[in-house]
Image 1 (cartoon, helix red, strand yellow):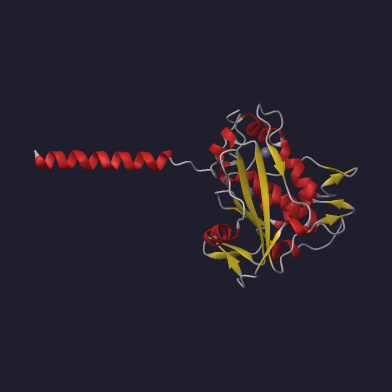
Image 2: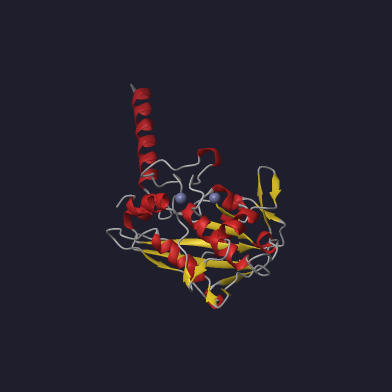
Length: 260
Ligand SMILES: [Zn+2]
Ligand SMILES: [Zn+2]
């Protein structure tokens, strides 16, 4: 009897503790964000020596990211205001980590150490860091990967890969590729494709993970490599000085309708 009671008590404790674990609010979860957020802040940090581009061809290029991320939430019942810094002074320089490459854990650690604002009940904060090194994945250094999203609202851009892009046909395409990479990785952080946000119609390129089957969409899988992102961006990210919309309709439908 005593043993039975003990077992019963133990079982109760296990149930209670696992419940409380699930009840704990995760402000950086995609579901919490779409259910509650009225604001999304992109917080930008960069390693010394990996300074992001600010302007190109007379345009402040960060308006491209603001425009495209805002487009993801267009028409939602509760508006989500997107704020993106557009001056270096609004971004944080962090010490050079003197590393050749970074794995997912390294990037999460940087976020834990340097992220200044935190997500809360109605505000999501994505930490975006520009790194002076390469992505380390599957046991090797990825010389051609321009960016990554590591979950928990943390994304990284690998500056040496951006800088390896030849200035060619369309002049200096590095700032454009950098911005398009930022949009692609924030897209993953916000649940695309089938990465936390349910699809309205099937458009996941399952063979290539959380990417889009639409070749004209910034979430197309090849856009994670430098050369292909260059050709995707082509003549630039602005037309008539207005930012171009680079998400396809399938992705827009997902984020505009999810938990709305
Ligand atoms: Zn991707
Ligand atoms: Zn898409």
